[in-house]
Image (cartoon, rainbow, N blue to C red; front, side, top):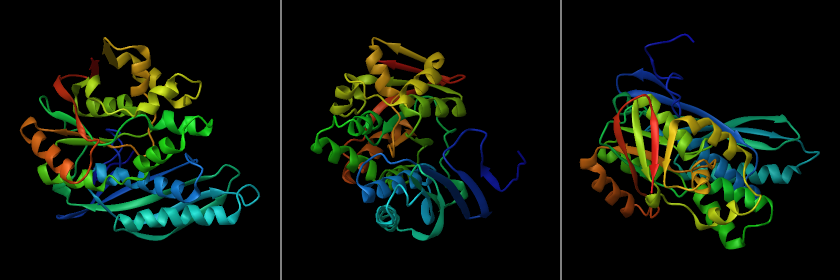
Length: 314
């Protein structure tokens, strides 16, 4: 792929978004994401898909300013009113982010999909990459895990209404406040936790930063209902693919196979995994707490330089 000195972040480290320098003090953050429904409520699906798409901008330390709709649907399968509700939900979440929805594109497709192409802005010297983690850093996760298991359970009618509301709130939550706190203290690295699960995205960060990572399993925020779904057959197929992908690079100490599965669960609109200097970790946690991010907590540590390996211990 052709390179340019203006392309500050491209594909070489599998980072969350591309970053293009416009000038000395301004760069664009560009990303796109869309997927099939994860909840039955069309407006909620729109809000979740929009929050998920904008998350990549927040992970880079940027602020979304403009979004374009991406909608795949067929009015033979999905009534137009449902499509309108999805779009309204997405627009509401874009407005909540302080960004503007400038239109978009739709195509005929019998499998419904929705998401956004998002443009954000960031100062070139403040871009947070997935390649900056340093030995001794503390790892902080800002949302609970278990989303994929719970949304799969929802499709099988196994999740109670209170649990459906709970996981929907988690997915709809913007990572804006987490990003704001991260930028205020100065993080070394960040990635958002989405389809590849905690271990998959952490492995990308470890490899890009050329470090190893340790997670302390008891510290990880995991929704109780995710454990319950593991006892059923309602397990997302992506979990097994994620597990196979990270298997050679993960050492699990005193963990059951079921517990490892939880960490491979594909997330939709998950939280940020922030790598921050140990001297700043308490200050970051204090800011996250004041901003109302009750699930945020330290979950591990960056170890010595290496090719990228993950240890999970009890």
